[in-house]
Amino acid sequence: MRLHKGQHILINKAIANRMADYASISCSDTVLEVGCGTGVLTSALLRKAGKVYGIEIDGRFIEILRKKFRREIEGERFVLIHGDALKVKFPSFNKFVSNIPYSISSPLTFKLLKHDFDVAVIMYQREFAERLVARRGRKYGRLSATVRAYATPEILEFVGRRAFKPVPAVDSAIVRLIRKPEIFVDNLELFEDLVRFCFSRRRKKVGKIIEEWMKERGVRVSVPKEFVNLRPENLRPEDYAAIVKSAKF
Image (cartoon, rainbow, N blue to C red; front, top):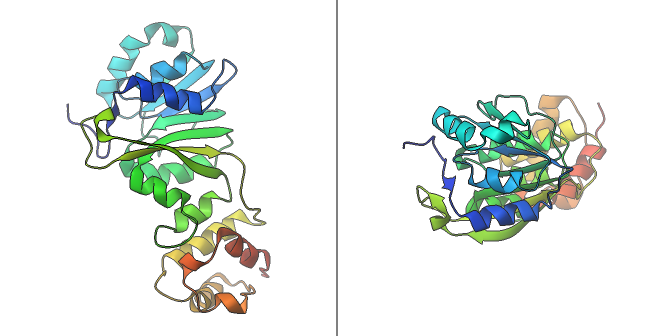
């Protein structure tokens, strides 16, 4: 069976059970899963959750899931949505547990962060997970800076390639996002725009980048002298938040 780009089906039931445990799922929870595949993780979620929403883009898996979870669908404990997770409107949920297609890791994570949830447990490509939790340096970037304005990320465990089918060319990692921002940001939209702008020019120095940003956006901010000659990866998320707090329009 040819799968969508970046899609690797989780076949290890023990890992699926651990993912459900990491999210501390109970019968009072409504869980959203993206990329249900053949339903290994879905089964683990349905054993614990009151209700599960599953988004799956592949029609072949939709048929498998409908047969496998016929009773849960009839009892409205499992609602299956056939569509692209980046395009469909997310239902209301309080926990997110997914083995997502690695090719959509970044846009899906940014979409998830715009929604209210308590905790998310996500299987990512290991390199992506390490970038997500990075604090400064080579792997630190727009993603790691932005996520901390919304949640606290942590890597829970690394997962070997044989837990999936087809076997991916990279290792994976399970990440938990707790909806507890590490930093306070006055203006999230402006913060995200500044972070995006800076990291798209990461070879330049912060002082020059922000001069350009202020001119384009029609906004004035104060940049501490010690930041002027640094690169974007040398500023902490709270440093970007402080710059945004000084904004005058």
